[in-house]
Length: 342
Ligand SMILES: [Mg+2]
Image (tube, rainbow, N blue to C red; front, side, top):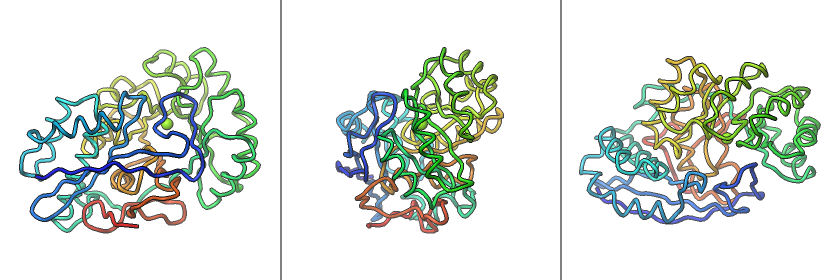
């Protein structure tokens, strides 16, 4: 297999801000690496979306890619053993492993002439609607972003600032009637204040709360889940399959992202594990191009909650892939990941 990659800078339509430091978007600039695996005349693509929160950067992605050659072998069908070898050596660089896993799936699907969702035994036409994210911003911009999201059935609001109630009032004022509103605190509340902060937001009729507090505080998460009576979904707490076991019986569900877990194969494992442990499943993304979104969208039929809007936040996505119809982001009915050029 021949491995190539290149850096890519794309831009969000609006500056993108969340509650915690370490966001992977700097103002409007989004720096990603597109990986290409070539074998037998077919090129499979994947996207690395490194996050400073997980000690990853473009430099660590490239340093990893320079070392993976001997671990790839020469048979792209061997996705399982290849991903296992990559994770054994580069567990802290799972955004890079994810890009390679995506490229392998893309290659195999193209070679066999079937979409990846078919390879996985799924129905790609049966996906829940996605939320559209409204990041932290001044209230007039929040109002504008909310009105622009009118075609979506769910709005996801980034909270975790002292301004949360005013933000949600603005969203509710500008959102269509019947629109669901979910919130993501991105670890922005302390374990002591989280319950009170969530109760203060109850009048805004929330669908669920994502990652209220910083990770690894399992007793506090259990108490919050038992007290507030709303679904609590982890994100920063649910990175690897082993995390799923720790969260069973503590929270309502887990948000899975390819860049956190190491790709489609790991995500599929996490989904099955979560189901067997009685946890709900959300699929999420970083701000990324249609390459990365098309990869995770292959799994969307398995999700209770979908938050796959990363490519829709971009002003200059150079790729095509996922379809968007009536607020549903779905994988395309094309071989592999179905990626094209915009
Ligand atoms: Mg989140």
